[in-house]
Every structure is written in C-alpha cells, then in structure tokens.
Image 1 (cartoon, rainbow, N blue to C red):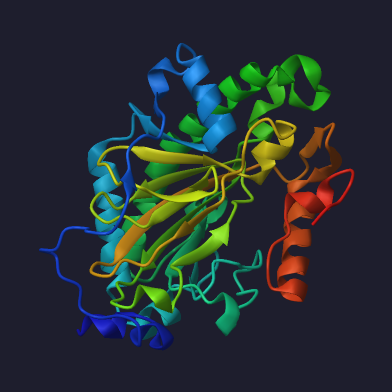
Image 2 (image 1 turned 90 degrees about the vertical axis):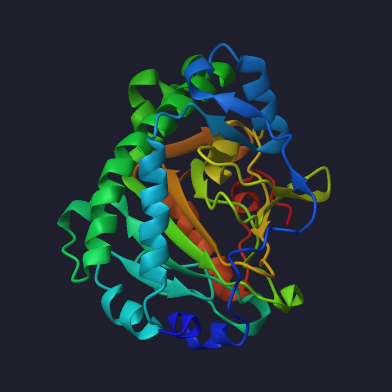
Length: 338
C-alpha cells in the first residue's frame, strides 16, 4: 500500500515518502534536561525539585520497563498507523478505543472538540482509556497485540507514576499541610482507573511552515510519561521564553508535569508548555501515558478554588468550543486573570 493512503485525506497534502537513511538534521537538540534515576529519586531530591520547579519535565532512567516492551509498542504502533485510513477509521472507533486526527482535543466519548483551519494539528492518534482495556475485544490482530502490550505497560507506568508522586508529596510536605493529601489517599490522585494512553503519529512534511504536529499546550494531567521515537525529534518545551527541542535518547522516558500537579503544588511546580514540530524528513511515533486524579478527588491549595478533575475537564471543553483554545488553570484561580 502507498504510505500516503495510510493518512487521513487532509494530511496527504502534507505528507511525502520519508527516507530512513536521513539523520534528524533539525535544529538545537538539547540534552541538558535533568536526568532522574527512578531508583535514586529520594537521594537526588535537589535535582528532582529543580526540574519540577524550573522545567516542569525531566528525563527518567532506570525506570524498570524492559527495553523490549518499549520497542514492541513502537513497532506495533507503526504497524497500526501504516494501515489504510479507511481501515483505521472503520475498526479503531470501537468503544473504548478512539481513532482521531487533526486535533488532540476530544470529549470523554472521543468526539473531536474542534478541527478548524486555525487550530489544525498535523497528527493522527489512538486514544486508549486503560481502565476499560480488559473489556476490549478488538477485531484487528494488531489492535489485540497493542491491547496485550498496553496491559503489561500499564502496570509499569502506574508503578512509576505512584513512586514519583509520593516523592513529590513528601518534598512539598503535602501530607502534613493538606488534609486531602494523606499518604493513604495518594492513589486517588494518580488513579489507575482514569489513566489513559495516547499513541500519536506525526507525518513528515517538507514544508514545516504548514503548521504544528501539536500546537502549544499544557497537559491537564497530574503527570504525563512519554515513550518517544528514539531516532526522530519533535517535542519542544518552553524554558525561559525559548523553545528547545528535546533530544530523543533510547531507553529513557520523558516525564512532564501537568496542570493538576501545578495546582496541587500551589504553583511551586510547573505545568510545562510544550508543542510538537513537524519533521521534514521522517514521520514520528510517540506513546504517552497520562495519569489523572480519580473521579471524586478534590484538588485544593491556597491559590485555587477547590475543584475536581471532572470539573476542570468540563471547563476546558467549554472554553475550547467557545473560544477555540484551552484557558486551563487560570479559570480556577481565586483571582482570575486571563
């Protein structure tokens, strides 16, 4: 099958055949992100704190996920995305799995919130709510392979997210200062039931001025854990008013803090602004795990009115529909400025 046929029709105008022999020659790859060893997290408290406060993301090593599993997920995702658009559209929209393109902004049922020319994203993806994965009976063998791999992957991701979050709680002294954050309730703020994985494919495009793979945003999560292509760059983060491109490095994960973590930390920690640049020569696959609070968990801190993640999500969706963009945390500040 012609590779172009695997893309949604509107993306085919941008895509071209990418060349595996090319190196990623694009600009300014950074490798000075804080490298955090999961096994030494408490011993590296100062470096970890600085990363959370100054960057809002870090590179995680010694994470305990087998490299074979990370690579298998990447390969299965590539195989799935290489199928024709019509096949994906027909078979990857069975609840709970949602196939999407042109925007990452979806309702809880998987409907695109907006996909207009002003905020079109050059991306296609698969949305997988992990709490419902065991009930999923996919028709495609590739989807079934992905289902089985993700069930294994989720056990590792949940362990990593819980470990990181507990150390954050301790560093922020939330156990003592905030009644909602007693250690016994930790798991309700990094809930396995509400966790989700998104698989993304960003097409190669010779004209990178056509738009963004994903426009500037912050994640609404507590934490987001990224297994990115180890050859092709694209993720860019905002640091000190400069956009920096994160270098892809094999067998590492990129962890970024989301809006829920910034609110829980009372703005001590940073929900990082990031975007994805389209690559001129090669398509890029990334797989991101998003961890959220449980349905009824209340976010409380001095700078914010008490709210649940569900209330936050509903407000974001209202704003995206009405304004065309996410307002996010400023909506929940005691004094609103946006």
